[in-house]
Amino acid sequence: MPVYEWVGKTLSGDTVKGTLEASDERIVRIKLRRQKIIPVQIKPKGSGLLARLSTPKKVKAKEVVVFTRQLAAMLEAGLPLVQALDSLANQQKNPYFKEIIFKIKQNVEEGTPFAEALKQYPKIFDRFYYHMVSAGEASGNLDATLKRLALYMEKSLALKGKVKKAMIYPAIVLTVTTIVLAIIMVFVVPTFEKMFGEMGQALPLPTQIVIEMSRLTKKYFPFFLVGTVIFVFLLKRYYRTERGRLQIDALLLKLPLFGNLLRKVAVARFSRTLSTLISSGVSIIDALTIAAKT
Image (cartoon, rainbow, N blue to C red; front, top):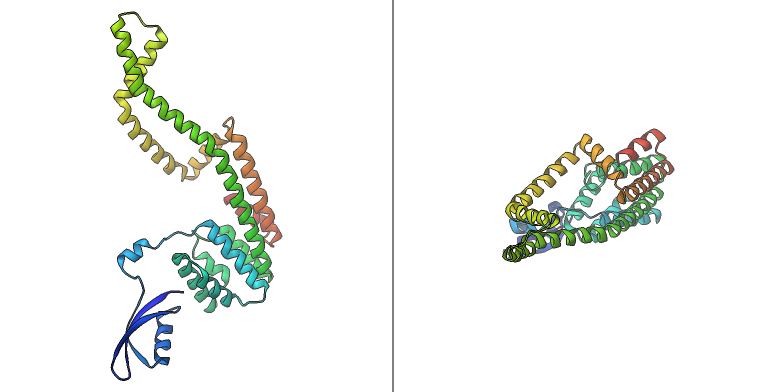
């Protein structure tokens, strides 16, 4: 819950100050009046520029999973949705996520459906999450739907973790190989070139090719680095487009080693997504559309 700093006056005219936890400034004023304190100034604690910059503006997928799992357990135990959201917001350690949960709770209190309140934060609760909650609300089985959703997200995170672990070793080998080759071409080969030159003997063609490659690498190395950075930047921009994503993904699926792994991951994710949506009451057409976009 947000913390507010306040300054006030007692009935005798003395100035007092302190901090209070409350959902908004109105609640702080009510609490102070109950203590017979006249509020003079109320402001959120840590509202300065440094505090705003230090506050994380990101919610991790694991935090969303924990939130979903706990909300499902509270609803299954018979707790009202608003009270469950209030309790989860108070327990949340991420200040940014805490603020969002409080806003969702306020929207629900004002009569907004839970799914529509979540839809306002697509970076945290994606299209799949929204449709699952919407189907759960419509069927009256929100707690069961949230349990399925939490299970799905846990399995997705586990699968993503396995893929990352499988990619770590090849990535390390490729990085180390590139660094070693660069060191050899820039520092080692020129030393051998000088030694061979002092010997005054004709060099074999393969050796001449390596020496020439070393010269080119040493001469154009800064341009190579800049070109690599620009290429990666443009590739990411192109991948964000629909056409670019289609072409690059098709190319990745044709890779000798990683293509088969990526294909299995995609099929597993599609099957799990479709199964979860259909079991939650989403129509087959909508389920296929959502699964295709996730």
